[in-house]
Amino acid sequence: MTDKRDHIIEKAIELFASKGFEGTSIRDLAAAADVNVAMINYYFGSKEKLFEVLVEKKAAYTRGIMDEIANDKTLSSIQKIERIIESYVERLFTNRKFHRVINQELITNQRETLTRIIADALFPNALTIKTIIEEGIKKNEFKKVDPQLTIATLLGTINQVLLSKMFCLRLLNKGPEYVPYDDPGFRKRVVDFLKQLMRDHLLK
Image 1 (spheres, rainbow, N blue to C red):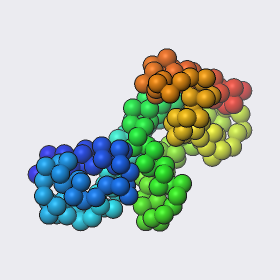
Image 2: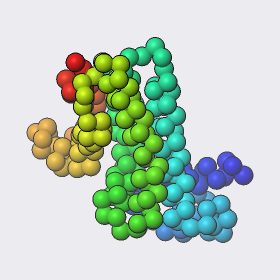
Image 3: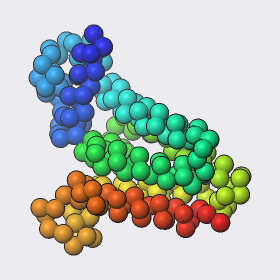
Image 4: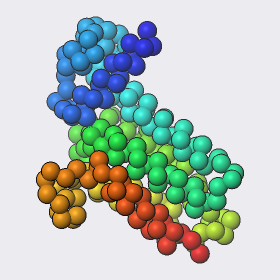
């Protein structure tokens, strides 16, 4: 039973990523997962509830990775930040289409319930970064920076690159055939830039 539920979630992620939340119907989901509509309603009750479950599933996976990094006593505060940068860039670039769907909901705020669900799911991950920064300040490893705006700077840079391919291509002076998100060299460039940015911003 759990396998069928997880299968529906995986197919939903693919559909929401390609067609968006609004453009995906329950019938689309049923056809993609090769189940009937009644089964989706049985497991989730509605398209909104299914979206909530998969957002939480993805956020929880990322949270597990971040908590592991945050609790690693062998790492300094800046090493923890750098590991999180590596993890975030890899995960968001790999799942960029679904990430765009998530951000579209946050930006448009057309469905307040969904917006709140997304914010509630993502907030603990931001809180982990905030805790690492505050610990770094307390240990005298970091300058007395603004933790919240540091997080906004970090995630905002990644989002700007991810959310507008056309802007990214013009910035890089590349043609439409180039897909920066699939280029390991560009991923490394983003990671290296963010690491240097955080070192300059945080370290005393």
